Image (cartoon, rainbow, N blue to C red; front, top):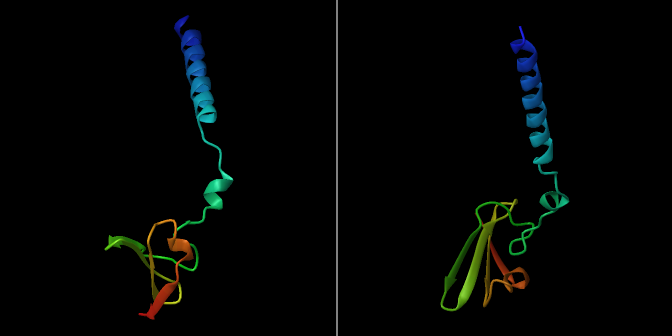
Length: 90
């Protein structure tokens, strides 16, 4: 009959440890994940981003939410956000 109190204590200990691990190692939500802005292709660029390099230029192509394909061309990736864009209708 002494096994039942020992088993109950062991089950209680294991459940307490599992609860502690779940609470202790659960990452908190971050404001950074909610407020992220793509530094290369900020809004209004949306789906299907594509980036390539040819003849010393970086090209960024993406679709917008109003059915346009936008292409940007710059000498560096850092310069792409400020580069002028060429848009065409799909």
